[in-house]
Length: 157
Image (cartoon, rainbow, N blue to C red):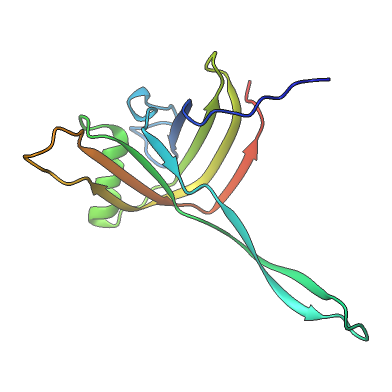
């Protein structure tokens, strides 16, 4: 019997592919790969409920539309990177760019064991944690993206 232990959530990597920028080809930037957390990976389907003709015991659930939750990435505030440049341009001047994202859960050898690909991600929110003179906590940036489509895959080779 093959043993498939559950994945741990603390090993992951994020990659961004900026599709429409000539000065940022589709090569991931290592500065934009490490995050403290990734939240919001979700899909749901709206259905139209219809009573089945002549039967009182069941409903038909007809698919209407798939929707996706927004994904939020958090990390410490660091120097300017291609991602922060794109976010500033997108949120500050409505210059939106096609961004594809890959989020990989990693095993103990840093090999991807699960991968989520987000297509046509658009920045919708950027926030920074509060500044507090009575605290010595890290300053955290949160980046929120809406996306058109998501697919989940097993290990990438």
